Image (cartoon, each protein chain N blue to C red):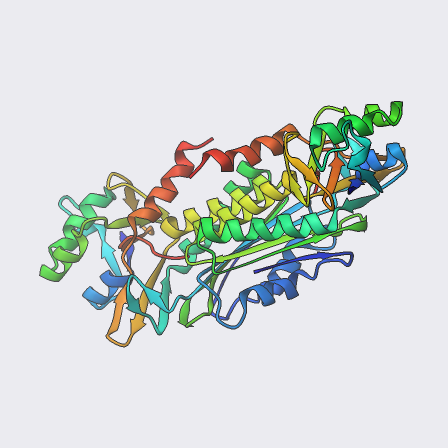
Length: 151
Length: 151
Length: 89
Length: 89
């Protein structure tokens, strides 16, 4: 039931244990995003993640609370990194616990789709040809919009 | 890219590490199912999982291969337990790695929805009032059917 | 001409057996092959408990580890399983 | 009558500044409140670089850590941020 913004790599195993706790719910879904070595055909060597700390915290906490209410979650957690990230490093981790698998899985998808477009982070990719800010993607906006029209 | 059928509890952290490997893909989704203390209003103290080993292995391997082709997975893993399971113990774990989050998450949901109705396991719940075989659920059949009509 | 019959879950419990051998020679005309329906019909004659267990709604039949329809062909050496709907996961 | 203006990502880079104070008294009539559009218009007059940065398509404005429309009311002590579409996750 919490959000972490951190410069350090995400310890996925520790996050999972903390989320599930000693008395796990029936259904636990997680999603982890990693830095890719390639982005729209260009090689990527590292990623810089700028963020707006106070707003990011507020947006992600509200997002978790929305997911909790919408999908009847018993527990949830969102961890997002900022700063300099190397290739194949973790970027984001979300986890959701519910009584039923559909809710846990949908909650992860909802949290990811929403934070991509609504949480104030900006990616700058560094490659052999220099660096550039990552543009927003129409596909991300479309995925975000689905959650407004569905149930 | 493999299936395990095992009597022992699932080591979720070890499964995650093995799935992701040293060079993770961009998007990793996982689902874990646990024994619930309650089932349709009745208290559950433990679960017995009977299975048909040769067929379970075949069905789950084919399921992983289908998920790989359908969702362009770079890696996947399905672990299912059998035998006597205590309260709050792991029952099943699935993991999927893809280039995009939608595929990784959908692959987990597809694998879970399909194995619930197509993999030869049978649950018997033990409670204070004795034990009984778990009936199949119409909602599970409906979730399974979605994947036949979609995409 | 023997086929291995496997029974699981409530069927296994009701019949008190998990595996038997079935001789296709028991069928009318002692054929080399038969469909699942014919084997099921022959097994159903073994008693009221078999009749009830094998004629429950939603019975599933798997031939050599694959779910099949009643029309599937069973041959010597095959493994034919009967069980109620699956409830894993 | 000061409002904190924050700039992020490509806007911060283009303008070479991440935070400034803006005095609502700079606006016509020195109002106690103004909408986001009025503040944005006043900042756009600070030079060609401001004009371009603040009038890019898809500019996002957040008032006190919440995305708002141009009609939202800005008061003393508020924090108003401008940035391009978000690309986290």
